[in-house]
Image (tube, rainbow, N blue to C red; front, side, top):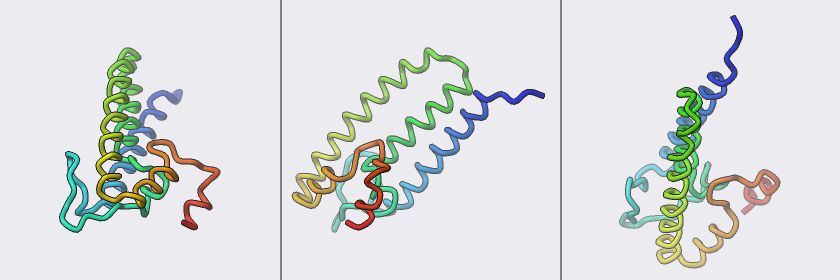
Length: 130
């Protein structure tokens, strides 16, 4: 039988997205909130996957949805994907603003050095030193 590369790629994207989401949630631990909220004695999480991406859960959601669109073979679903992208960008900006207000210079440096969604491959060594 012939391999269906669309389904294989979709499965890989979906599994990668789910894995990234769970890794991100595990890294956040008690600091995870489904809505923007600061906990008592909250700290800015900058380790693990958050050393490479500021909003890995949102990236994971987009990757998962891309995989689901591939399974459905319905390209028109990229329209809601784009809407979701815009919503997540706006949400990430709101979160960044709240963290900046709470953590000041530490959050400012973090936001300056760590990209919101797409990791900088070339800067990996510098980020690990910081």
